[in-house]
Amino acid sequence: MDLTFIIVVFAIGFIGSFLSGMLGVGGSIIKYPMLLYIPPLFGLVAFTAHEVSGISAVQVLFASIAGVWAYRKGGYLNKQLIIYMGAAILIGSLVGSYGSSFLSEQAVNVVYGILAAIAAVMMFVPKKQVDDMPLNEVTFNKPLATILALIVGVASGIVGAAGGFLLVPIMLTVLHIPTRMTIATSLAVTFISSIGSSFGKLVTGQVDYWPAFIMIIASLLAAPLGAKAGKKMNTRVLQIILALMIAGTAVKIWFDILM
Image 1 (tube, rainbow, N blue to C red):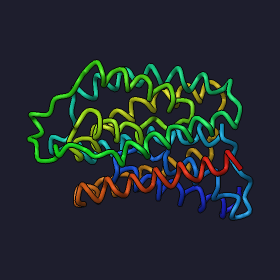
Image 2: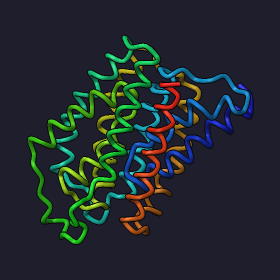
Image 3: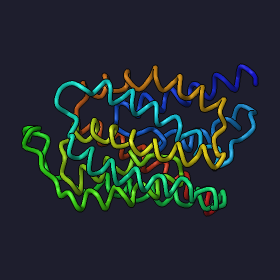
């Protein structure tokens, strides 16, 4: 294991986790393609899709809890949303992560491409202006939130993504949750989801431990810094950054699948 490998993997983890804390996603929407495409640019051996999904699952566990810790004050964590969506996504992620061991590399990438495309479209759907709503008056459709979280859990468990990049547009567009509450609460739900994803990836032998460890260290340093930056940024700017990142990732993944 050379120094170049350590630096490249650490940099991927740091950048992805900073954006993760800032935007309320677990970071796999960013780190999945970075882990697939960046190491070969430095002459390093490319990770397989299964290795990338395994590393992402374990790393998201630590990135999301670090982000939640930074948002613990200020009333941004919606406990009811966390309970309903967290329970459903945990079950789904266990099923998806275990089932992913039976899928081919191409199938894992296709599932990721579908998720990224759906999330990209949802981020550009016009949203109700709910950011001015008092946080203690926020309500949501509980059965709908539960069903959507279960579906997201299964799909994201396959790619080790924990589903944060889908939870954010669902909370904003479908459940009409204010942006900052969405960012904080989705990190908490993502943490619960990543428990199921990590367990499934570990028991099916899809985790490469050394790069996962490097990514975890980077996450613990970068996610709280990203969360601090996110609190200070305009909510519209946050939504645009996330939408562009998801759209760019979806285009790149599908280009590779089809070509």
